[in-house]
Image 1 (cartoon, rainbow, N blue to C red):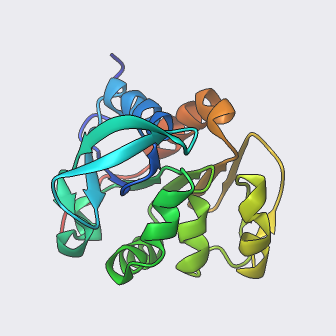
Image 2: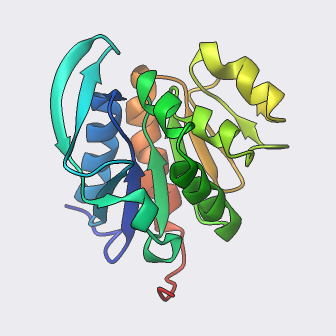
Length: 187
């Protein structure tokens, strides 16, 4: 295990319909680098994960409700995809508010596949260069983002990737970018 993220606490915001591999692989990379992770959701208990959006892929325990979470408690945020997951998140006032508040801190936010959909809803990518799954690129453009088709895009505090095929590069990028975060005291 490497230790570049030792002492860092990372929020993973997800709900039912999350693409399992897009939650598990980044979480594994973060844990492997010494970070602590917490899955935040819009309901407690467990969330239903999916594989390729269609097949059930088990349950993921929820560590806390986004409605009770404070951005001050986290060093970075991960938004996994799956079509249903971000669609539900962007309809939840607490989830959108958390993303807006997190973006306002300047701390890093990573989103993959359909995950950037929540960023568009939160209106935080205006003027930023991002990538995503092809079907949400128009929404990102309409939210003012400069959308490109690249494996990983890092612009300002945002780290974005297109799909599960990009997970190896995405995981490397989030560990590197999150390691660059300076220690801060929780409020």
